[in-house]
Amino acid sequence: MPQVITASVSFAVFNSNGVGGYFVWNLLKQTDHDLKQKIQAVSIQSLSSMTPTQRKEHAELMKREMVGNLHVLLAERNDLVEQTVLAGEFARRLDQTKADYIFGITPLLSRLGELLKKHEDIIRYVPKAEAAAGQDLHDTRNSVLSFHKNLRIYTASYLPNQNEIGQAGMTAMLARIDNVDIKDAFAPLRLPTAKAEDETAQELLITEANMALEAGDEEKCKEKCSKIIQILDASAHFKALANICLGMCPSTARSIRIGILTVAVEMITRLDISTVPAHLNLLGSQKAAEGLLAQLKTEQKADAGLVCEI
Image (tube, rainbow, N blue to C red):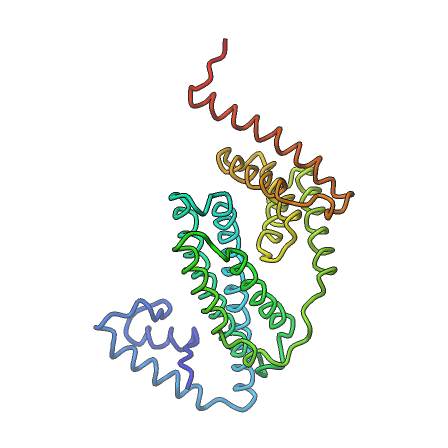
């Protein structure tokens, strides 16, 4: 039986021992063993004596909590995605044939490992959070399936790798991804969102981010940009625009802004501009980013005492 302890039950048990407050499992010590056993017995007795209506309500409450926990897992995964993408961009800037490439590929492999672990936790948790396993949370299942596909594509983009550790690490990571039993666990599913719809959603996010920045709402701007960066298969030009927008936020530390804008400019230089819709004005954004980047670097040098004003 689930070991659920209501506030009233824990309060009653504690008061019977002359102690007030609520019971917290992870604060148990060895000396509390008897008290734990007593609370378990009271809890099980209260559950077993529930009416059918009470059991139904209890089950619904537990499912609600599980759905809430699922959203926490998804938020944690998105945070890891952002960290992984930043580590990946740093690795791409390094020459795979040079010794310092190790300082780019090793953190990236570590981030990918953490991301895959969180992804596997979500895969196992989704059926548990559904009222009827395999029949609810359709959108969540579709997004997790799409994420799995995109995670594999992203990992494969670092192969072949001229660095021995990079080649071995990414090959092993691909094998781990392929070994995840997601198709059976998540079948049947509707088709993932079409690429054209994804592009529209990303364009809306970057538009909202720019509007928020112009209005002085940096938190909203950062929120919209982060959503783009957290999409593994987001179009490179939208990722670049999101980074530029983030780099424009005055409240962010200067060193971070320099790093973000550097990544954005380098991303744009690798793009085929002819494939980017003209109305996005990517070249104009690039020029603005380069100007701000030069200004921030000059300020940084001046503060470090490397530039003397005459």
